[in-house]
Image: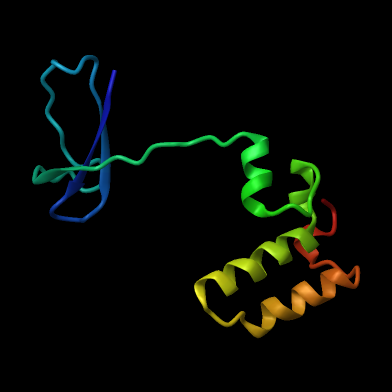
Length: 112
């Protein structure tokens, strides 16, 4: 039972069409504007990683997957990504990471 995605030529948004079988005929229209000029779009797919793969990809410092909820670990990851892409980290992000290392967490993560 495939789900096909289409991009609307009128509004540019994606619409999904559920089809019972691959050989079944279907009529698609934009779910957002009702347009009939649709092009088949390449659908995205989900890829689930094992805990071991996540730990290997994000570095050897954390010992458990739950360690990635720690704002200090998130800061280390953000620093690596900025370095990897050759982009300078924004001043506000640098200040939040430094504060987290000192034990002062931003409001959204204090209760984690």
